[in-house]
Length: 157
Image (cartoon, rainbow, N blue to C red):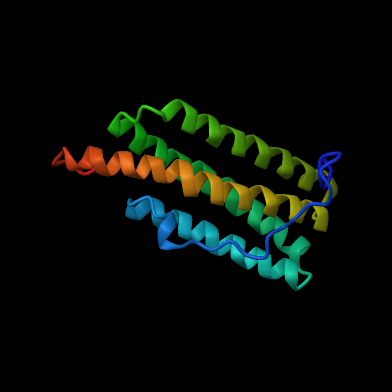
């Protein structure tokens, strides 16, 4: 893995990615999980700016492994419950992120924490949070709201 694919120029890491109400999917539990992810990434941005990014990389990687396992399972449960027609595509996106995180974790294990690895992780997660949470998850949230509007049963029942 390199800092940037050949021919694409230097890796650009955003200074901040913040959760806003505009990213809400309308499911309290999912929104709370997303907010925590954004909070953790924000702390990591601060650590990078303060030149502590490499030291904070392993704790973030540990958190992310747990987060994707629990969060993705909850989203999948809600999608199956509601009969979400885009379940397959959504799960493929989850699997791609899990695979990317696995590769970064393997590199972390081999090389130890490095600033370059930290920056690639931030770039990966920044794109994921904006694109997946901001678009794909919100689309599911709208579907689920419509589905629940037709039912008297809550998804946790």
